[in-house]
Length: 223
Image 1 (tube, rainbow, N blue to C red):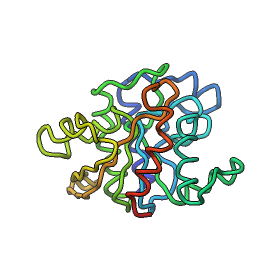
Image 2: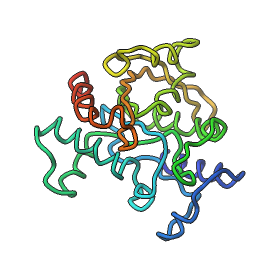
Image 3: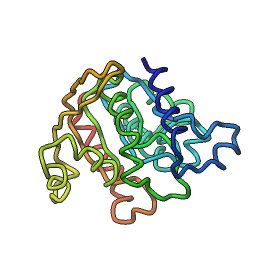
Image 4: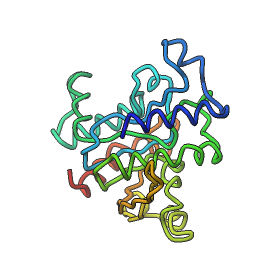
């Protein structure tokens, strides 16, 4: 089922052009149309959900692998072991306990977010990953774009109004994801969203606070 999902995503990528940083892929000998869909364990209780891929992610073939992803992975490691991972090999062990994915499984040119049109093109495939392949129910979203991707799954205006709350990085929101399988049958999964700011050094308002905010989130999770 997972292999057929990857094939379907690649077919959609080839069907019509969209902004794609092809040079980054070809520089490391990778096919730009082949999706980098997720890393980690599909049986994990927690999913970290980001915006899109960066150069480091393309090189590694994993979402959330660069500077921001390392902050997330170190935070999760610390949440488990109470200390910072001593090396990259040990840090990689967090992938046994989490799922890492994005709104779109491709890298846009530069650091510009994908348009809503592109996100909608690939939405059905991300839905299938989260509803039909992943077994968890807790999603920590990273940044505004990642959280608002879930707008269709709440009641009208619910996700938007939640994100406008002053306590959005401490509170939780439950929504119902919907996905269609290869036969067109619909499936649902109730998930809890736990938004966090994006852990980018460019996010001056929250970057220094991110490790503490992440630990607070993990204290609310079961894993």
